[in-house]
Amino acid sequence: MSTLAVALEARSPAKLLVWVAPIVVVLLVYPWVATQYQAMLLAYGLVMAIAALGFNLLLGYTGLLSFGHAAFFGVGAYTVALMVKYLKVSSMELFLAGAIVASVLVAALFGVVCVRYTRIFFSILTLALSQVLWSLAFKFFWVTGGTDGLRVPTPALLGFATAKGDKMDFLSHTYYYYILVIFFACVALMWVIVNSPFGKALQSIRDSETRAEFVGVQVWHHRWVAFLVSGVFTGIAGALWVPLNGLITPDNLLWTFSGKIVFMTVLGGFRAFAGPIVGAVLYNYLEAAAVGNTVYWQFVLGTVLVVLVLSLPTGVVGTAGRLLERWRGRTA
Amino acid sequence: MDFFFIHLLNALLSAATLFLIAGGLSLIYGVMRIVNLAHGNIYAFGAYVTAWALGRLVAGTPTPVLYLVLPAGAVGAALLGSVLEPTLLRPFYKRAEEYQLLVTFGLLMILGDVMHFVWGPYPLSASALWENSGSLSIAGNPYPNYNLVVIAIGGFAAAFLWAFVYKTRFGIVLRATSQNMRMASALGVNVNRVYVQAFTLGCFMAGLGGAIIAPSQSAVLDMGVDALVLSFIVVVIGGLGSLEGALVGALIVGVVREAGIAWFPEIELAVLYLMAAIVLLVRPAGLFGRAS
Image 1 (cartoon, rainbow over the protein chains, first blue to last red):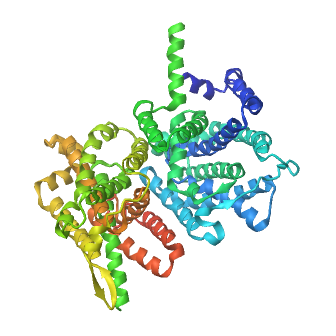
Image 2 (image 1 turned 135 degrees about the horizontal axis):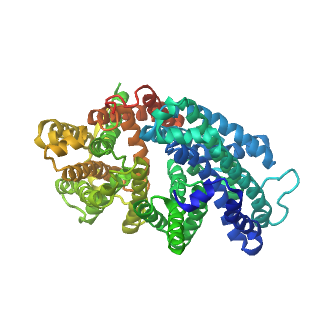
Image 3 (image 1 turned 30 degrees about the vertical axis):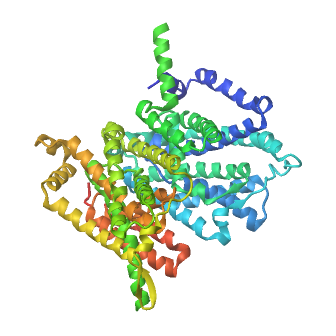
């Protein structure tokens, strides 16, 4: 395992602090040194990082590749939009609570169906089920707005902070910090989960299902819980994403959006805890740069993906770790 | 009753193209165990090549000549496939399935934008062939002859493939490689060559599916992504890797879609995806698949 991964995986607080502290400081001061647009872009990246972090509990730690995580993202986002439309709610905390409840329900149901299978069958089953939700959002336009989607105004945070006046300023400062706090909470929670006995059991299932079963791990049950947790993280990301974007359309339920989440995770490296986080933020910048500079941005991203998978299968974090290790070996 | 007949013809029409796309997808999976996400855009590529080739011809070209140009898309897609397999896919057979899905997903994005670049953002239509073919009357309603040609091509393709896979020497080699690649290799089969041939044949089928759809529905950019998920449903119902399964799956999906459009349009797609999910649950290898 690479040094960076070791440093992040080893539970030595001092080593961890060296890596984490500067990143935290940068994230905290960023909205004050960067432009509004840049801060918004990072906010998008952090939200997607929560989604990818949840996704990676399945891919990196349980060994299940879901091609349907757009379902949970969409469920979280549409729950918020429907709460605005039908219940006239404007509190972000209620949105999050609603999104968590909805994604728990959907993930629990989908999980029962999907975790009976592994490998390609799991991938196709998650894809098929997420497409069910997509087609419902697409066709029931009187509820979901069809391809026009649903608009979501900026919510009230903690009951008092609202967007009076400048909406962009609100999103790039107040809402940015709101996202940041939830992002830290999610990262900490996921850290605890993957290092808990439960997380270790998942990794044992990933490495050898048969052996895990022999030492007494209830494979089916563990996979189902992992699926549930993974779905809820992605659902939270969906709920946080909607106010930022202001609009939710069925595109965020389509399987190509699931593919994007997979892309981010592999870009960062799914074998490292920090992989999906780095990957999501990086992907966001990459996509923004590609979309901003050419209409053929899909070509750019597709090429990056193919080259990445061909040459850097351990992702950015994994490769950086390996380079660091080599450099240390040379200086030592 | 005649109304029913028209619905049946429409169901067969969508089954014919679906079989060509899904059959190619299934063939490729059956032989090299790769789920080719780029397959949808290979189908779209076939549609674009045919639409482009038909568009190059001067107005007033006799209809038989137009029909001769029709397979251009299939040939184009086959050529594309024969280049893609050795260069991009071959390094991935020994890697985990995740990487194969990712690389073909990247390829899907790349091909989509290549078509965008070459043929522009607007639909490319080639309706001359469709219009020249005329129509016949079924119970007082006009029905385009061209649709009957498409159904016939689908039927011929199915028969031809069956004969190819079960009655020729190449078919035996193909099936042997699909059942046990190592054993086939040990018995002197050039596995790399079989892989290129199978992938090319799969792309030829997808390209043909695109080619025959181009005159009636034009070539549009997102047709590939849409067709891909539909053909996923087909292969999941029929069984990944089985050609019989692809045929039966295409017929089932064709009939359900047609019934859905007529009677339950809101949940037509949802019903299809749910069917696929239920089949996966009851028979994970599909109706005709064999458990691996």
